[in-house]
Every structure is written in C-alpha cells, then in structure tokens.
Image 1 (cartoon, rainbow, N blue to C red):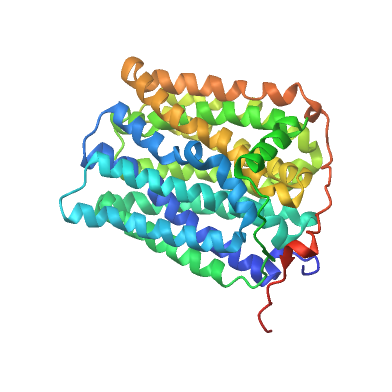
Image 2: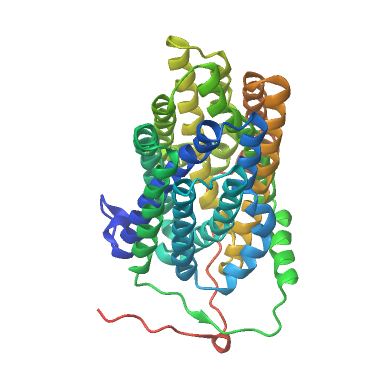
Length: 430
C-alpha cells in the first residue's frame, strides 16, 4: 500500500478503481431505491400491502441464498464475483423499461425482477466486504471502510436529488436505464483492478452444509460478533418496517411528489455523509465498542418526528430527524465493519459476512410484509412510530456485552493458505 498522506488509500490505483466503482454502482442503486417503489405506487397504483410485498421481494434473496452465498464466495475469487454480478444486475434493470415500452409491465413481473436483482446483490455485497481486507490490508480497514461509506453517502445525497427530477421528467421505468448503465460501468471499473487473489483448486472434501455451519458457529460463538448480529437484526427489522411506509406517508399523507420525495431522501443522505466523514474521529475518541451501542440510542429517537410531519416547519424538523438517524447509522456501520473484518480469519470472511447479511437482510422481507400489513391495518403514520421505537431499542444487545467498554479493535492475523491447495495467478505486467 502507498505511504500515508492526505489522500491515504486513494493514492493506490486499485483502491481508486474500487472507490469509483462504488460511486457509480451506488448511484444506480439510489435510482432503483426511488424508482422501483414509485413504479408500483404511481404507474401501477398498487395497494400498501403490495408495496410491502415488493420491498420483501427486493430483499428476499438474503433468505434464499444468504448463507450458502458466503460458502460459495469463500471458494471463488471475489473480484470476478463483483464483475459478474454487476453486469447481471445491469441486464435485469434494463428489462423493466423494455417491458414498460411493450405495455407488459405488471406487479408480478416487478416482483420477479426485484427478486432476481436482490439475489445478485447478495453475492455482490458478500464478495465486496470480503475483498476489502485483501485489497487494502487489515491495518487500513478503518480508513477503507470510512472512505467507502463516505462515497456511498455522497451518492445517496445526489442520487435521489437526480432521480426525483428524472422520474418526474422521464417516468420511473425509463429512469431505471440510468441504473443499468451505472451497474455496467461499475463492473467495468472493478475489471481494471490489477491485484488478484490466488486461485483455489477444487477440494473434493468440501461440503456446502458443513462450510455454512462453520460460518454460523463462528459468528454465533464469538462474544463480540454475536451481540452485534442480534442488534443488527433488530435494527434492520424496524428500519425496513419504517422505510416501507415512509414513501407512502410522504406521497399520500404529506402530499409530496417524486421531486419532493427525492429531496427528502437526499437530505437524509446528508446525515450519512456527515457520519462517514467523522466516523474515524468518533471511533478514535469514544472507542469501537461504545460507538456501536451508543449510536442507535442517541440517533434513532429523532426518527419519531416524521409521523408528526406536515407541510411546513414540521416537515423540515422531521427531515432533520432522518439526517440524525442516518448519521448514527453510518458511524455505527463503519465501527462494526472494522470489528467484523478484524476478528475474522481470511478463510471465513465470506461466510462471516454472509451470516451477517442473512440475519440483517433476511429480516427485511419479513419487515416489508410486516410494514405493508401494519400500514393496511393501522395506517402509515402508526408504522413510523413503531419503527422509531424498535430502532432505538436495538442498542440493548450490544450494551450488555463486552463491547460496552471495548475501545480498541482486536486483530486477527491473515492466514496463509496451504501451498498444495492453491496456485498463484500471474500478475499483469507493469
């Protein structure tokens, strides 16, 4: 890695390519986040429950393939997984405007595309987090995670702000073409990364279920990772329940159009960018463990301002509450990512990340259905109250754990794979 400087890891060309790929891919994701539900709400005029089902389909891939994805990714080279899943998602997103042009778009086809897109996203995200320690080295994980979080937050600010006018101008189906282009460009950027992992030879003794069980046992048996994964499962359950009705509330209760909703989401993402920019300093001052449990306790309660919102100053105050929620969420995720990557041996990184994703994202389909059902029974406003209370309570598992007072990251030395099980991949010239 390059010597320390103000630019830090950005002086390394491989990390720059990954950084740029993150920006373009996340921009595509932001368009999907706004356009996909708006297609259902506006173009197809579906019910609140059907919006919840769409949210469930988007994240159901974690339940269907979350755990085996980790075992498979541990067998494969992560760089190749990133490239292939980016290109596959680009093709899928391009199908929606084609179906719309053909007047063949239905909620069922939207469900199918959302499910397939989510499955590829599972493999991408597991490979991405597992690839970072190899690319930058374990000593640089906090900086790398903070920089990745900053670009994701920056794109989260600009993405909805760009997507809102595009949806209003072109319509939500055509806006997804921009998402498809972003995914494809992200895959091409990752393909330019020159640092390659070694190719693992096939091991006939490997067994998928045994490998999955090993990853689960590692996470659930680790006194530092177990409370984190439980807390994350709680937080994501109530966050997605909240988000499922957020767009419905802003559209139907507050009366905002697509442009106004885009501005609200951009303002919320400003909090995430703030969190990414200050995360390293906050973790250094307070400590990794205290940051993990204090973040939801201090920044989730302001989310309860949203159900009180109406046009005018109350809406501005509610948006500020969303910004605080996003700030705390990103700071917590940066601290947690460093912890997870630091305590996990290289050979288990994929399965560790897949286990976390299975618990966290696996709760999202249930949360989408729960949010849709509760929205139908109680209304969107009540669901926002429930979500805010549940997100705040997610601090409890990590408070009553060794993380309460743990300031420094424990470090696990990277493992050297057995020579007879691997062969090196030639490095490109130059």
